[in-house]
Length: 78
Ligand SMILES: [Zn+2]
Image (cartoon, rainbow, N blue to C red; front, top):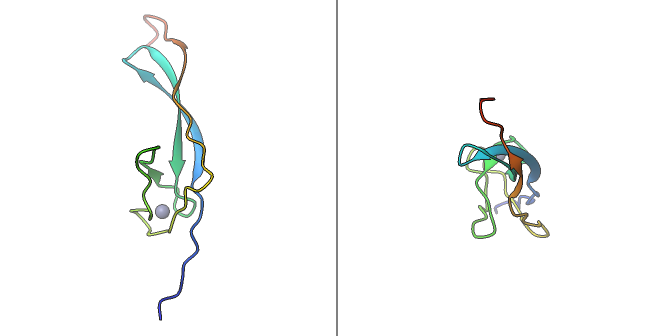
């Protein structure tokens, strides 16, 4: 008999990145609760298992946040 493994919620973490090279954008990443691998999850795609360590995942109750634009990067600061 196969033991049932408990599904765990991924960890949400905010990151900022430059969109189009100049728009400072806040984005929420979801990480595996066991190995911290970044899950490429979104409203349209939720993996059932971590592809690194096989941890079973549940996205029940997860709120998907849209990317938020925080402002523009100044010219010449890169
Ligand atoms: Zn994992």
